[in-house]
Image (cartoon, rainbow, N blue to C red; front, top):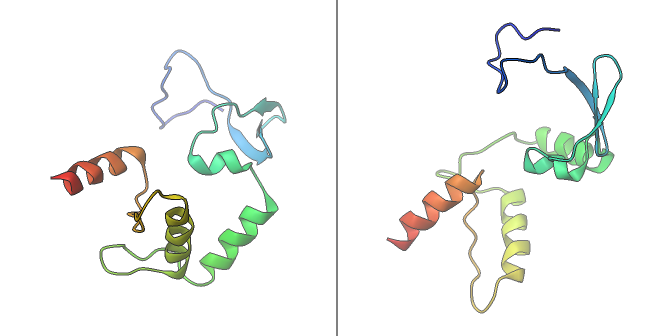
Length: 113
């Protein structure tokens, strides 16, 4: 399948179309397996199609998909923050949750100011 609308990082080649993932492997539409050594998004490091992760996503999606942190907190966010704070040194016991490294750096600069 030649990409018609996605501007590829390398315009001189047609990339395989990923259709499935299992553990640390991705599979293209013709069945070829590729070791996903990059991990991509942070969740990929948990393994593709991991049953525990899929069940957790389904369970959470049955309750709420997203609540903006400017207006709400949630039990999963509070649980994660408590687990992270338990590893923090000294009296650091607050966690500021963001979605990416660049967002974390921007938030850290704003908090430092």
